[in-house]
Length: 105
Image (tube, rainbow, N blue to C red; front, side, top):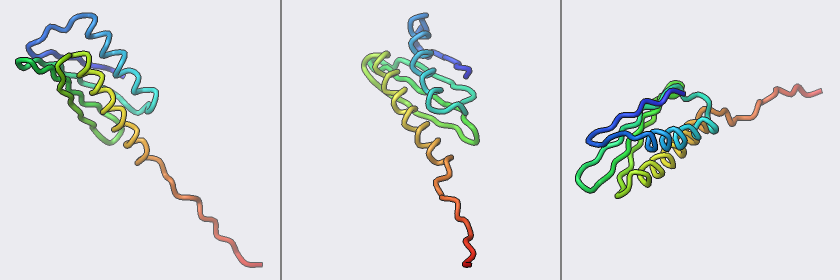
């Protein structure tokens, strides 16, 4: 999975980059269909905002989180994206049983 990281009014340090790679990279454990992710970290006065858009097979997933700490915002964002990935994967799974036609003998 390719992760693009962008910062608005915030400098993307190596520590932030590694933290985002770690948190968003864990999502691949649940679903291998993720092709790329675009993460935007921004600061607006005292609010730290993290947004992510993931491109998965046949769909795009988007989530954002606003916290007082950037690392906390990334944690909340990862949890939200993780829930969306699980829901998307569940929708892709066929839960119907194979109905076999039984002929009476």
